[in-house]
Amino acid sequence: MDIQIKLFAGLAERLGSSIITLQLEDSILTVGQLKQWLETRYPEAASQIQASFVAVNQEFASSDLTFTADDEIALIPPVSGGDGLGESDDGATYISSCGNYVITSAPLSQEAVSHKVITPNDGATLVFVGTTREMTGTQKTVHLEYEAYAPMAVKVLAQIGQEISEHWPGAKCAISHRTGKVDVAEASVVIAVSTPHRDSCYEASRYAIERLKQKVPIWKKEIWEDGSEWKGHQTGPWDPTKNIT
Image (cartoon, rainbow, N blue to C red):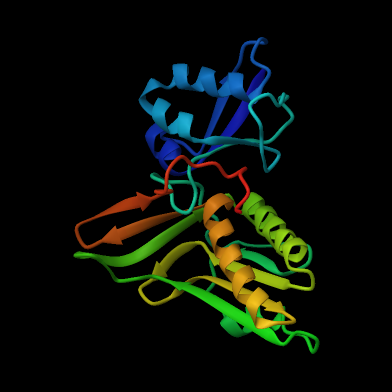
């Protein structure tokens, strides 16, 4: 069976390509078997492969899921950063069917994002803006570079919006995230949430950014005056399939 696997972050950098084409044995039918085979085939990247999740048709897949050559398969390293170079969507904009969830290389507008959620029946609206910080300790950042598995990222953002509407009935959410170069003090993400009352609005806004950092396939690279580094998940074992309680 011949399959193509999309690679991102450190895996793409380590293996020298954003896509690899493999001829697999017929006995390799599940996601778990695929990961084990890849770790053996690419020992230089085994630790990164082990820490990654497989996405099948832009959905995080369980280890026992079976796949075919017709499926779209991607290997997703820890998100909210990563540790290598992934596919670039420079110049492209991806928008969910409802229009509220956007991945784009264009500058972000707080007003445009908040306009999507403000309604006469909601008494509270919060807009969270994540910007590029210049200093982290003694390390000076020149700018950031973001990469995304954009079609899947938009789908996962929409899923987060659905989760918010289920947890906080009546809540509305819109999220836009940048790709490419983001200079110091520029916005990389804008999240707008509206609810009937302020307490739930604060809770839903915090949930949105934490969930985004947990599971949306977007990677961040810090560019310094004397080097660079991809920043990934740093709060223990990464599992994008877990719920936030």
